[in-house]
Image 1: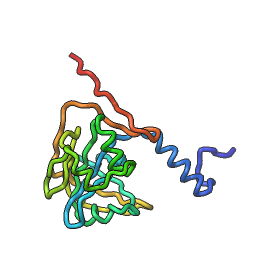
Image 2: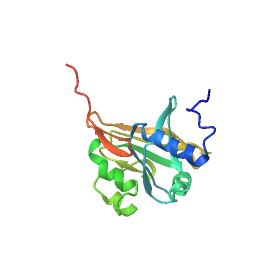
Image 3: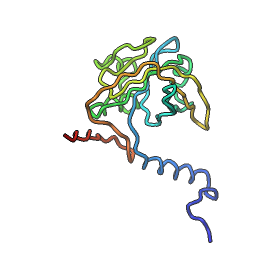
Length: 178
């Protein structure tokens, strides 16, 4: 009896295609990751972000090594993970490179504060986690940045923004039970 769920016998291109399709079924919060410093100021939209531990507060962010911004993130060593509220789908598209808005103009939008070490912080993010990259590990085509959070800002209202089935979706905040 053959195992049809195994990808060991699939050609690499089929396994890669199947993996990407499987990941399209994985809902994820939408974040704009920013950096600033001697290697420049830039940002990216990322959904590959997750908690690692709360002691010390650490999260991970995956970044394609072929990205033109990879060197800025690695060189600056400081980032801010901005968890986007539902109303910022267009901002997510700007930082994903889906619009023609240049990088400097993205930071000229009236949404930004200057955080620790000059790193841009989204003023109305659901959460902003500023911190330092404590480890950078290369895995395949990507680098995994382990970020120790040194300053956290939270918002208690607002809808979420998630990425699912290759589209952005607004996720309503549940009503509080009285």
